[in-house]
Image (cartoon, rainbow, N blue to C red; front, side, top):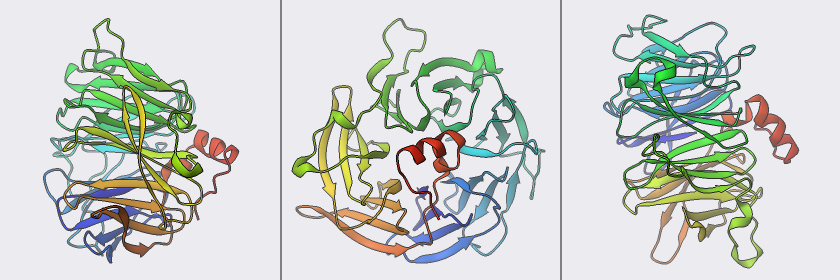
Length: 357
């Protein structure tokens, strides 16, 4: 996972449970955050304070760090039940609420909520708001707050369900406004569309679904695009191979969905995604030599950041005629919590993907 804030630093979670801080311009390593004792499931910069970074981990904690003091302990620690192991999290755009999705605990899995404002220094459960326990029945692999509406939350799990909540409506039954079925294990979610009222869902077996969730009570169809395996939907030039999807993101300036896919040898493919289908844009070659696990679009720097199993963090910038490899930095390994969930580990083995070091 990679996160880019408005400051000159970007954050990358690594397989040794640490988080590396890199210069946005040169990718030079400028700091390291240590404290988690299990795989890190994500990193998120604060929306309001550019020097604050949130991290989540399978060790059952979310942590808030001051990146101005990279050698120090986390300034805040968020916990819930001791049996909870987190595999996804996000922070609302108002930065009032943190939400984490847990792995399955016996027969249950939970969405856990904290009030960020109430937590004290080194806080434990004092800021815990509560949990949703009925909406998913397996590992909750992705949690995404709406970029503009602080009470709107989407979650996806290995049970094949993608739920949309309006937290302002109260309890879990009332707050659940829409349920979509991707018929597979959800790997990532992204709010898209001009009004950010569409959801893009990718699955662990390369399925792709695009839903309109603007009017959950409407009789109009929610599904704009759906494929159990979206790889054959686009023809690549020169016999190039599209073996997996890394993820998707909404480019607000261009008002389109950028979908990133790749081959197991490190080649990347940029695709345009809409209700009409997928369209090939560009292939990126000469950078990675193994599977790419994560990416982030840097809107300020107008560059694409990618991290792969080859231990490289790469920056791709648009030149006059083509996109080429920019700065690079070597990492021990880019971590991907998607390989830590039970269902994805099994599917990844079937697909021949190597486990990260």
